[in-house]
Image 1: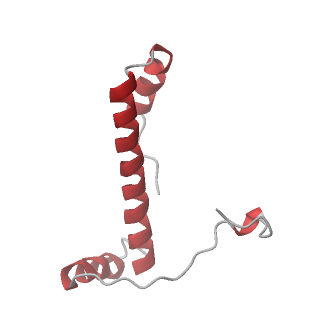
Image 2: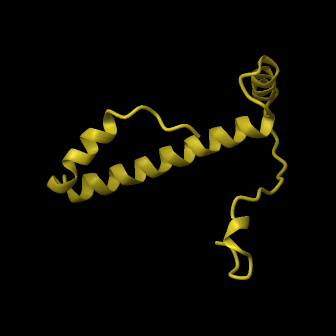
Length: 89
């Protein structure tokens, strides 16, 4: 969470980190960039991490649902969401 002294509009700022990846993953990332499918290495990593975060949240939600059982009030929402196309990002 951001300190209260930083205005909310700066929430989208990014930080640079260094990571080590196997050669084959770097080659894959670079091929995506060279082909024009992605604009940068950072965009490939960002998309992958966002996808992983969504997966982790969905897995957590599945555990909660398994523990608590189905919620009749949310049945329609789940069916609606299942029919939506993927949200980018």
